[in-house]
Amino acid sequence: MKQSKLFTKTQKDALKDEVSINAQLLIRAGFIYKEMAGVYAILPLGLRVVNKIADIVRDEMNKTGGVEMQSTALQRQEVWKKTNRWDDDLVDNWFKTKLKNGTELALAFTHEEPMSNMMTNFISSYKDLPVYVYDIRTVFRNEARAKSGIMRGKEFFWKALYSFSKNETQHDEYYEKAKVAYKNVFERVGLGDKTFMTFASGGSFSKYSHEFQTISEAGEDIIYIDEKKGIAVNKEVYTDEVLKDLGLDKNSLVERKAIEVGNIFSLGHKFSEPFSLKYKDEKGESQLVFMGSYGIGISRLMGTIAETHHDDKGMIWPETVAPFKIHLLSLNQNDKAQEIYDALTEKSLEVLFDDREANAGVKFADADLIGLPYQVIVSEKNIRDNQVEIKNRKSGAVEYVSLDNSEIVKYFQNK
Image 1 (cartoon, rainbow, N blue to C red):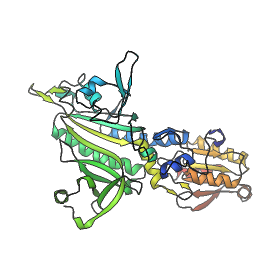
Image 2 (cartoon, helix red, strand yellow):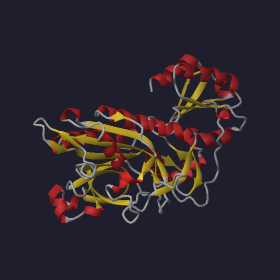
Image 3 (cartoon, rainbow, N blue to C red):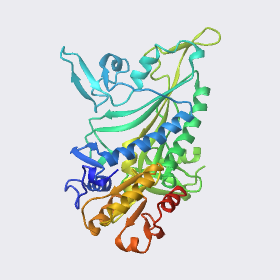
Image 4 (cartoon, one colour):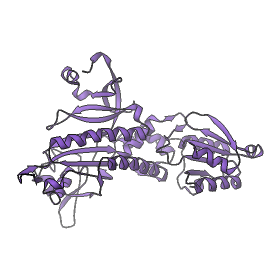
C-alpha cells in the first residue's frame, strides 16, 4: 500500500479525554477513530491488525474441530425470556430497540440463548454430537465504564465458540483442547510470555472456569501468579482453600494487574434445559446436551498488544499481527523506492510505501509511531553507496543490504 493513498494521518497528540495508552497510540498512529466514548471505528491499518488476529484465532479454533458461522446481531426477546436474562434487573448492559410494529428486540451482547435455541433444530441424536460452533463478529454492551480505549467498549469485535457435547466426559475432552488452543493464540499474537491461564469462579456447574490474563499496568483485574507453574488465581476467588485445592504455595505467588483477554466456561445444562435441547442416546433415552462457552476479545487483543508493545516513540507490532511487515521510506528517491516496492510486493511481501512529499524527520517519526517490524530507508546517500538501510523497529539494530532488488527480497524472505 502506498502511504499517499492512505486517507488517515498521524497525530502529534492524542485526544485530551483519552487516558489509556492503547487509545492514545492507536488514535495517533491512525489505527482507530473515536466516534464516542467506548465506540471506535477501525481504520485501514487497524483493520489489517484485527483481521490478522482473527485469522490466528480462526486457525486455532478450526484445529480443535470448530465450525465457523455468522450469528445475528438482532435478537428476539422471547428467546432470552426463557432464561430470564431479558430482565434489565438481571442483565443491565442491553442495547434494546423496537421494530416499526412495536416488537422489542435487542442488539447481541452474547449468544448462549440464541445458539441453544437454534441447535434444537439440528441436534436430536447422539450421532449429531459433538458440535463446536463459533463466530467472529461485532457485539454490543451498554457499558457504563467505557474508559479503557478499545479494551472496554460499547461495541467490540470478538470470537465466541459454543460446544455441545453428549455428557461431561465428552465436554471435558474438548475443554482441554480449548486450553491448548487459547495458549497457542496468545503465543502467536505476541503475548505468550505475558499471559497466564487464571483460575476463576466456575459458576453453578464447575468448581472453576479459566480466564487468560495478560500482565499489564492497564489491567482492571488483580491476579496472583505462580511463575514456575505458569498459572494464576483471580483475586475474586483467592482463598486459602483455593490455594490448597490447586498446591499452590502462598509464598511463591506474585500479585499483578492484568487484562482479561479470553475465558472458557463449563455451562453444563444451564442453557440446554430451558430450551429442551436434548438428544436420544444409544439406548434411545432422552438426555440434555452438555454445553461450554469460549470467548476471546479480538479488538481487545489489539488494545492489549498496544499496551504491552510500545516505547516512547510509538507502537512496536509483533510481526505476526503487524499491518505490514515492511515500512519502505523514500527520502526523495521515489523512482528507486518504487522499484523496490514492486519487487517486494511481487513476492507477496507486505509493504507500506511512504511515498509522500514530506521531510525525513516526519517520515522517521511516523514510521516509529506506526511501528512496523522493519524500516527500509532509501536515501540519496544510500543509493550512492549502492545499499539500503534496514532498521529493526524492536531492537533498533541497523543493517545494510545491497541495492540490488533481488538481494532485498532475499533478505526479507529469510526473515
